[in-house]
Each structure stands twice: as C-alpha cells, then as structure tokens.
Image 1 (cartoon, rainbow, N blue to C red):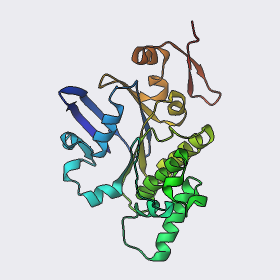
Image 2: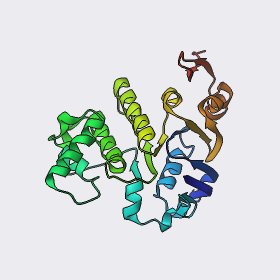
Image 3: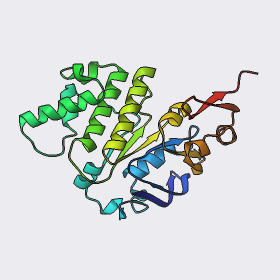
Image 4: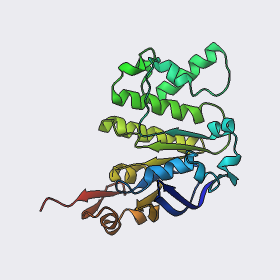
Length: 259
C-alpha cells in the first residue's frame, strides 16, 4: 500500500499542498481531478518521490520513500510526467531499452522491446528516430517505456504507475486504447495506476477511485459514483454541470449550455 500522511508542500513561499492524507492499494486505478492550479501534479510528483520535502510523508509498504534505494524504487514505481524533452536522435527501440533494469542477452533485450511496443500498438515505430515522431506517437512510446519498466522487469512486489496527463496528445481511439491497457495492467500485475486527468468522463469510465482537489487540498475522495456529482464538480470547478448515467453505469458529465 502507498500512504500519504500529513503532506504539505510550500514552493517559493506559496503553499501548494495542505495536510494531504490518503492511501492507495495495488490493483486500483486512481485519478486526481481538479482545476488548474489545484495541486494535482505536485501531489503526483510528491507520491513518486520527486520532492525531497515529501519523502518522509510518503510510504510504500510502510517504508518511507527516503529509505528505499533508487534501484529498488525503479522496480516498484514508474513515472510519466506531463512533458519529456529529448534532444538526441534516439531510436524508439533505444528509448524502450532505457527502462530495462537488469543486464540481459541481446535476444532478451529484443524480446523486451517487442513486448513493450506491442502494449500500445507501436511496433512499426521500432526503428524510427524518436525526434521525427508526432506528439501522439512520442506519448505512446513513452507510455510503453514506463509500463514496461514495472511490468516486464519481473518484480513480484506491489508496483505503482504515475501518469500525468498521459493522453493529452492522443485522439479518442488511442485515449481509450491507453486506458484499456492501463486497466489490464493494473488488474493482472498487482499495480496501482495514479493519474492526473482533466477529462472527467475518461476518469469516470476507467477509474476505481477519484481524488477531487482544489486550492491544494483534497475536497472529496472515494468511489466514482460518490465523488463525481454535479454538486461536487460545480463546487470545485465553479461551473454548472448536468449528470447523466451511461448505459453501463458510470456517470457522464455534461457542461451547462451557453447562456
């Protein structure tokens, strides 16, 4: 289990997070929602170990992040930030190979790369220069890299996948492909996926639990049907919405029409 206890973050004299408390079990998809500036990405970075001032407030299996060695941490958590800037002309296969944590034979490396690319249907990009790819293609390659890091490196421990706006550059078909892969990985490999999202309806469809944030605090947290209500959304975003139910049961958010 990943736990956050009494986490507060201050950057440049501005409080970004205030007394955050939560726990996340492997085998679940958790989406962090809220308006711009709510603290969503800061919370994600804190949980993944990017902020030194948060290391003692975040534990995995009862162990604070600052007591987990970097090699072990790489096996149990993978992170995809909002943007990844690469300035060198790596091949896509080389990008994937960067997530291979153990030394292995050429055949094993080739098999690892092929399996990773197949996760997100980008096998045809194997020999492409990463810098020549579209934004959406780059995003899918990076998703393959981070998922492979914790799924294909043969760790039996609970693992955590941190994704910050991971489908922002993708069309609707690839958005749903990504979330279906993430959902399958979560259920089959003892993984928790923690995602920052702006699309409330994607979060509704694919999440097990939601964290709804505003001004650095968690306003609501829990199951989708309990958190994603018209009152909660209007309170947090300051914009009226209507809720309807999808035939399969999850809530759909419809913004109010223009006045």
